[in-house]
Image (cartoon, rainbow, N blue to C red):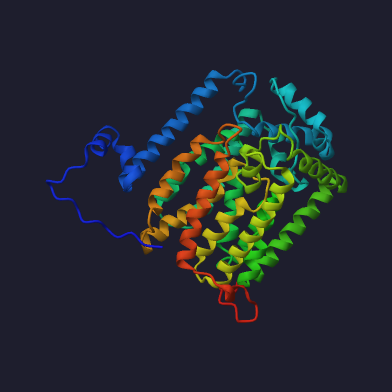
Length: 433
């Protein structure tokens, strides 16, 4: 792996070639982003993107009728399910959410759409603590509150990583951020929890552990955290995570009953069977399983390969967290690997990569850029605009793979691994928290 060095400045008489010169003159902002984005270019591009997002959202709301855009879409996307789930929880109890007929009947009554498929509630009862307050708000107020709270949570967690406004602005002006907003999903919430769990394990282990424990509301995103904590000897964070998860589950039993957990596990079994159906939107997944099934691989083989990839990712995270003393390197490894470790992760969870991307930029500025690293970051800033893509092409997964590959190059450059990094027979070189 090589590190970029500064190129000699061109002399006044040097002129760009005709094609690049013409493009640079006509599209200076795009040219700057594609070649060597500086501070002014980043601020300008981010401002333009945010204005475009705001104008598009405002236009969509104004063109809608009662927040219904057409006969197939609603402003807020999947957030409609969270809001209706809160109403259903209050009216019918927690077990009713796991009954597809109940959930879809209420959705149809609130938002009359031409639905080709049924929607299913697949969250554990602990997730009720997050959505329950929405039951007392109107849909517009609930949607605005959800966007404000989750975005602020992600912004607060990411701002701690690097005391600079520019990385945060660029991250939230990215196409991945736009996708997270318009889908109304949990991308910013999970990004905040993964950032705290991965970035603070050796500095504020209790806070990191609490964040990891709270992440059990989407359990598939926490598979690699125990591996990381065990590898580095972060036992205080490990303990705090276990206590938080147990307390959260216990409170859910007290408030919602054991029956809600029975309904959840039954729903998970049914959802596992639906993953292999042709009607399931595998092309929206950012995982190896989604990639393979979109291309026609049999579900059984795809899930087997997904398992092998998950083991490889666990080994990667274990080795990095065991060997590296750098919290930045550890965070990049864990945040980049997390979205790929489970089969069931959608494209709207891409903000989980934000922490890794910000740390890549920090390492590039402080230690020198790797070859094409800066250009790769800018490509990943734009490309999520094309997700989820057509149902025959796994664009979302390819972008996620590219993000992990860029992160892995930096991690392995700063922390080369060998077999000795996987042994517990020698003293842990990590920071014990």
